[in-house]
Figure 1 (cartoon, rainbow, N blue to C red):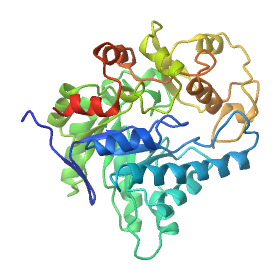
Figure 2 (cartoon, rainbow, N blue to C red; figure 1 turned 120 degrees about the vertical axis):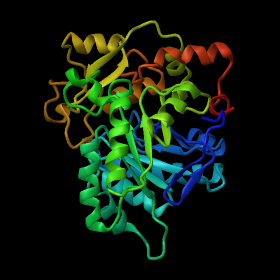
Figure 3 (tube, rainbow, N blue to C red; figure 1 turned 135 degrees about the horizontal axis):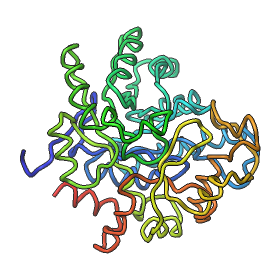
Length: 364
């Protein structure tokens, strides 16, 4: 394979390099980071969930309205920063404002929608619902962890005469944040590895006559990893953790320093959303594991399924736990990160601080 990375097409969109920014939600990936990656030749994804949450947020309706306002602003700002570049949003099926967020993305010119945390079976219907006649609609990219999930999505979407523009295959074995399995015992199994899923999905798509790009996600760190994924049959990669400590990441310096200088293990945690996650084991995680009742503030009913919304004594508020660490209260919330999270210190030691520097290192 050539030293130079190839370009990547997703539907009508094409990037100079086959790199998609992972849309880290609750305000981490906003316009500055998405715009920087798009300007450097990649796809810049805004994390579209929980953008409107503040310390003063007290109710569901207040959160939904604020989310819509912030998402609209971030899309418009990203498109301006990138000169109408490849800007998209990551939206979670599991949120209670999923449809409202799709409406905002369609109406404000997002170039693509990446969607996971559940199978986005209704995504084409919702996009069509808010499409204006003659408008170019976003390219649609489901996040999956198995070929079976891809088959289910294609079968359902064909009712609308549409197929996915690409698939993001995210492995729970190395990815950060909430992971695409319900049982923590499944994490680490070969059947969920990129090495297992990508070749099989590629063969499945080819046998069905579909030319759908596959984007590998989870544990991708450097150019060697990218080339390894391309050799497996992927058309590109999605990367999130690598950009956590960049200047453009919309988080406090305390948040970034906590990742850069971390000495705690990266562990699998139980989340109130009903699926495991990968995070740094900080004081908050240790308190949760000791079954301590932790009140982070009133529930805003952000998710369709959440233990905390049903029983305030059963768990903790996940969206506030993520908000706290972003704002700098790094021992009173969840520090999601991928399996390579402790490598962030390598960039710090090499003087790599910006998204553009990372993109340059990956693509030189």
